[in-house]
Length: 470
Ligand code: ADP
Ligand code: G6P
Image (cartoon, protein in one colour):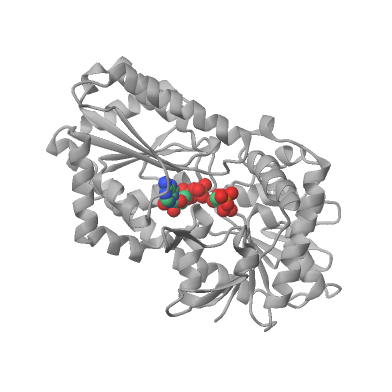
């Protein structure tokens, strides 16, 4: 069955003449789903939109179409760089001091959301095809589509944390945004906690009635469900088995030159806890100098949202930290932190996962965090150290849970994990937990995630406005 996906970001980007998945959890997760099902992906086309407004992918044997929307530069500034990235992103991740409220942001956001809705209505030729709208860039789109097609099936997925209503009180536009989302039949979030927060926020909306996991609103019933997203397990398994990927993993270990290797992989975003992680790495050597020359950290960070001052500032901070740590501790050819500030292909990331004895996934807040699942799935003898403030913690209980703000605690945990990896019997202590994690990741697989969400969407009774609420 075909599908219309609506997301701000395109699923693919071109790198040195090749198509690779766009960076970020949403694109990497949904791309294989659309490749399998076929359909249309409506997205902001950035600079490409006018030159190539439509793209068949993959070019040699097209499975789906990308419809690229032109959004005027000024509107992008207000809508994407403003409302999405300076208001909703920090708000949802509990960084309230970073929220910049400006009327112009919201006005641009409304215009962009209308633009998306109009493009979807053009693409959506068969009204029986479900439409699946994604994330905080497009909260107004479900209601705009509903107004045009009252009987359609519309799903909405929120990929980041949904904070409690007290946090939403900070925004002057919470009511309008919520009304926008409630244009959907089914609202999906990653965890039961986010579902509870979403329902609690709906209770603040005058006229909305919350009944269990349903919201009755304007004569319709909207279901709210937890659907934790997963990774493309089959592809990662295939990449991990490729001889050249395995050879690359061996090269990464050789390059480190230490008995132990740790990896961190993130978009360079202030929610990811990279400065805290690096501080813990430094603290490890201060408190446990026995690790000097024994362990290497590969911190991979992909540039993200570089137009925003807060992201540029973070880059400077991380550059300085890495410089300071390496300056203080580098010796005899050993580099404590290999910092790689660029994008990698999924195969290259797989090689790092295979190479690492442990992964540090320590976001200060994260909707899910797919890197945690990717590492847990690919690693053959490694340990996942995971922030308890990531959605992934609720689906991966066998990971080593840490508080990412607690630098001393993180250094202590690192020391304990590294010490346990120093000999074979110690290493084997992790086998059962690693196997349990792999089962969890297998069950979360992104294709199953999409199937579950879409089955639920398709199974939902259509309640037209004015009909008796279900
Ligand atoms: P977010 O959605 O906030 O970016 P996730 O951890 O959920 O965080 O998803 C990040 C995705 O981006 C993962 O699939 C990961 O493999 C990918 N990714 C992270 N860092 C890089 C990088 N340096 N190069 C390419 N892809 C990356
Ligand atoms: C997160 C968001 C996505 C977003 C991605 C990358 O995963 O949930 O919606 O696409 O980050 O961010 P960017 O601003 O580059 O699209």
